[in-house]
Each structure stands twice: as structure tokens, then as C-alpha cells.
Image 1 (cartoon, rainbow, N blue to C red):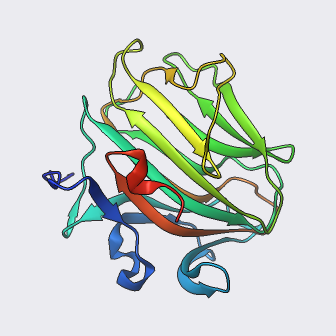
Image 2: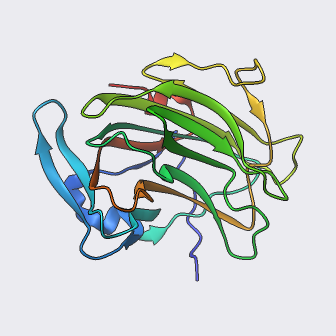
Length: 222
């Protein structure tokens, strides 16, 4: 059962500091023999390394923990999630980030980031499926990139919204807006970082400076 966590008065909600170990996450979804470990990167210092061998299908964390309790994201609130990512393999996969639905849900995921043909794509899964590609940018292996995603959470297709900054620049969606209006909340929604899919490919996702806040400035690239 998910435990309610009261949002802090400060804008910053959570940091995924590798020094605190995997207890910063809700739980792990990492198939053996994959692993999630803290390592030192020459450019970013201590980072998370999500290692997914070709023989497995998934190595991700699932949710976040605040003050020892699993954090519950609430409708009617705005959240910003920010992080740096470096992939060792730019082959196609199912996801490097998921805003995933759980519980008695109707959506698979409101938004997801995945590699397709050398580009990172954001997809939105509306009610009824038929996933929509709503944004993309070129990404190469062994390059650091920064992502910041803003979400106003609502189960109403006309009230929820998504924004994305890529390497510090606000992006325009395929519908020529900077704010994509869509259903962003189901029964339960939680973030997942790592690697999902890409079976047959050895893939590692290095993730640094994980943050969740209430404004873009909380999670902007540093």
C-alpha cells in the first residue's frame, strides 16, 4: 500500500542523491543480472548507473521516497522532474524515463521518453491507447543531456499539461505549442528512470542530479 507523504513547504521535494543509496527510490524493477549502482563519473561526480544486459529487459527504479515514505503525487499540483542522462547505446528501446500509471489505471503511461532511430522521443498515451509521438531530439551514445519535465496533474484531458526543457532550452511539441495539454494523472502515477526494452542490446543509462520540485528553477541544469 502506498503511504501518503505531505509535500514540504519548500519548493524542492526530493533529490536522488547516490550517497543515500537506493533507499531514495520507492523500489527497484531491475531484472537479473542487471544492476543499479552508484559510481563516479569524471564529468558529473557521483551518479546512478542503470546496467541492462542484452539478456534482460528492464533495469529501472520505481517511484521515490521522501523522509522514509513512498511519495504520492497528487492531482491539481504541478511537479517538475529534472536529471542528466548519458546512454552507452543509442539503439531503440522502450523507455529511459516513464511517468507510469499503476493501480486501477486506464492509461499505460501519460508520458514516456524512449530512443527511436537515434532520437529521444516523448510519447503520450491517451485513453484508449494509440501512443502519440509529441517531441523528439537527436541523442548520441556517451553524451550527457539534461531533461526537465513539468507536469500539471489532472485526469481531465483538457486540464493536465506537460512541458519539457532539453539541455536548458524549452522545447516545442509537434502541435506547435510549448505546453502540451493532455491527461496526466491516473489512479497512481510514479516516475521511473533507467532502461526498459532493447532486448538483445547491452545498455547502460548513467543518471545524475535527480530532482523533483514544484518549479522549473528547482530542477534546471546545474
